[in-house]
Length: 429
Ligand SMILES: [Zn+2]
Image (cartoon, rainbow, N blue to C red):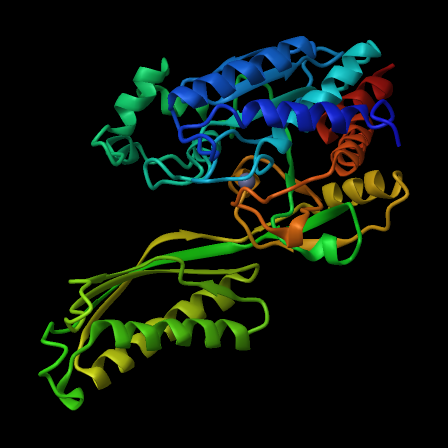
C-alpha cells in the first residue's frame, strides 16, 4: 500500500515521532507528570486537536482535554483517550496511540462536515504510569472520583510535592473535585473507550492487527523487606548464616512457581536491592518488589495470601525477618459486553477475524467503570510484543486499520440516552 492509502497510520506514526522528542533524557524517551516535557507534548496535542476541529485545553490537573461537540443539543458525552506520560526509557506508542488515533478520527469527521449524536471528548491523561510521585492513574482517578487529596502531599525524587508540581504546571491542585465526571454539568458520560498498543505478543503471534479487550486485570503490588545479619564472607560458617539475599531468592522463586501453576495469574519481581552490597559481606537488608495480576480478583487475593504465608515460612526456616505489605491494589475492570460487541463489529468491518483477549496491563479505562461502561481496542505490538522499552513498535498499516475501526465505532455508536430521548420525541409526535 502507498503512504496515501494508509494516511491515518502514516500521520500517526509521524506524530508519535515528534512526541518522542519531548523527553527528559534524550535519546531515551521519558516523560513524567507535570514536567516541562509534559507541557511540550500537551501543547503539541492541543494543536493537533484544534487542527482537527476540536476545542481543546488543559484541565486543573494538566490533563489534555479536547471536545468535538455533538450535532444535537443536550447530547451525552463519549470519552476516549489514554495517557501522555511514559515510563523511563519508554517506547513511542504506549498511551499516545490512544490520543492520536481518535484525533485522526475527529479530523476525518470534521473534514466530511459530520457531527455525531454525542459529544466526543478526547483526553490525554497527565499521569498514568506513576513514575514521578509513585501514584498511578492520577488523571483517570481524578475523573472517576477516586482521587485522594492526601496524594497531593507526595514528593518526587527532588522533594517537590505533587501539589507544587500541579500549580507550577499552571493547574489548580485544590480543584480535584471539579474533575469528577460521575454526575455532572459537563454532560452525562455514557461510555469510555480506549485504544492502546497491546504491550504483549498475543495478537502478533496470531497474525492479527486488532483485538477486543474483555477485562483489564487487577493488580497488587508489594514492597518486601528481608532482614538478616551481616557478617564476614570468610569467617561465618554456612549453617549459622542469616543471609537475607539467599532467603529473598527463595521467596522470588516461589512467586514465579505459584503464578506459573495458577492459569490466570502473572507475578513479577522487577526490582531488588541488597545491602551492604559488598562481595565479602553477607547481605543483611534486602528489599524487593512483587507485582501480581489477574483478571480474577479472588484468584489474585488468594495468591497474595499464599505468597505472604510462604514468605513467613521461608523467613522462619532461615532465621531472617520478613515484612511483605501490599501498598497498591486495583480490582479487575470488566469491559462492557455491549461495547465489546460494537468493537467486534468495527473490527469485522475491516475484514479482520475478531479476537477477544484480556489486558494484563493496567490502563486509564480501568478507573472508569465508576463513571460509565468501558471498552478497549488493542493494536498489535511488534518485536515480540515488547513494550515499556525503546523497541516497542507499531506499523503504519496497523495504526491505520485501528483508526479505521475506531472511526467505524464512533460513527455507529448510538448512546442509549440519546436513543431513549429520540424515541420519546417520536412517541410524542
Ligand atoms: Zn499505557
